[in-house]
Image 1 (cartoon, rainbow, N blue to C red):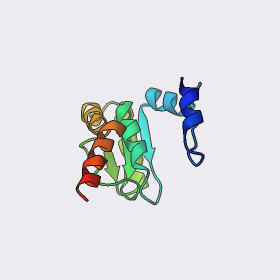
Image 2 (cartoon, one colour; image 1 turned 45 degrees about the vertical axis):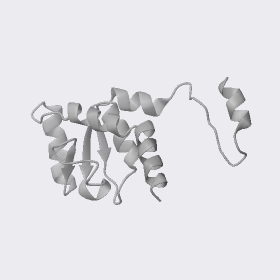
Image 3 (cartoon, rainbow, N blue to C red; image 1 turned 90 degrees about the horizontal axis):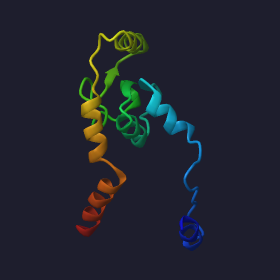
Image 4 (cartoon, helix red, strand yellow; image 1 turned 90 degrees about the vertical axis):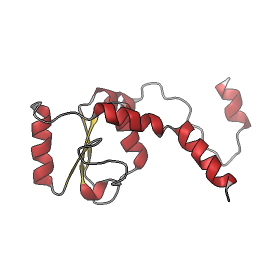
Length: 126
């Protein structure tokens, strides 16, 4: 049935379909920590994916949107690599509390379906 839908899609829409052995998803669901360490803000969807898989988020401040990954709220945000490294050590030795419950709730609020509904309301208001 999915193949029929893909055939009817516009020619400028790329459909990859479901992946058989999705390594990325399996890694997030089996990981203890997800790191954002780039010098620019990362993809918001990756943060929500980490939250949905109940993977603790560790980030450098410049790597995440501050309204999505909130320090000690739904992850841990650090100013430099040394403090980030220390935070990860504390977490792996069970000295740093998890934020899983808060993460899961935020991920559920920001599913594609829910965000889509919000966008529709925004578009209707224009």
